[in-house]
Amino acid sequence: GAGVSQSPSNKVTEKGKDVELRCDPISGHTALYWYRQSLGQGLEFLIYFQGNSAPDKSGLPSDRFSAERTGGSVSTLTIQRTQQEDSAVYLCASSFSGIPEEQYFGPGTRLTVT
Amino acid sequence: AQSVAQPEDQVNVAEGNPLTVKCTYSVSGNPYLFWYVQYPNRGLQFLLKYITGDNLVKGSYGFEAEFNKSQTSFHLKKPSALVSDSALYFCAVRAPPNDYKLSFGAGTTVTVRA
Image (cartoon, rainbow over the protein chains, first blue to last red):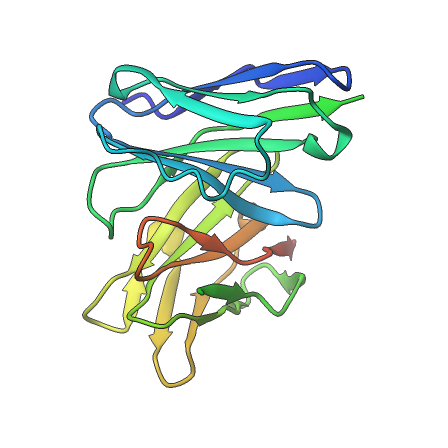
């Protein structure tokens, strides 16, 4: 079946511009996660959505970052007033509900802020 | 807080030789441990997980991992490496209280030479 999809695959933007990154999880997965993969920083957790519960935003690095999940499916990660340090690969993952379930990752969006 | 350490940035082995990628973890409760692999320009792919039960876990592509509670380790192994196993490998842990968050190691680049 279809895996997690993300768009765009690459995004180049100028410093100070806003960007939106999209994630389509696997159908039937109720949990959705965003991570950031930076050179030299490894993978860091950003935000978690589970069903209709309030999201866990504890990993968002600043108030310039926000995310929504509409209808329990598609999610959008928005970065306002982008900075060069925001350059990274943004990964989305989804899983069935249940803590031990493995997360399935999308191919990522490579964001470059010039 | 939970954390994962992958002490080797790089592992180089000859094709046909055994491959081991090391991982140690630190959590305050019982860990759920995962291995993921990332091929160039691809998203993370799930390899295997340890939740409970047998300490030796078998996963995709002939990989296995051994959970050692006393040494807080979860090393990834493959008896006979293939050139196609060359990739970036990540160990990850989930543990109470924030069970849904994956904490990743920094990653180990595996190069298998023909």
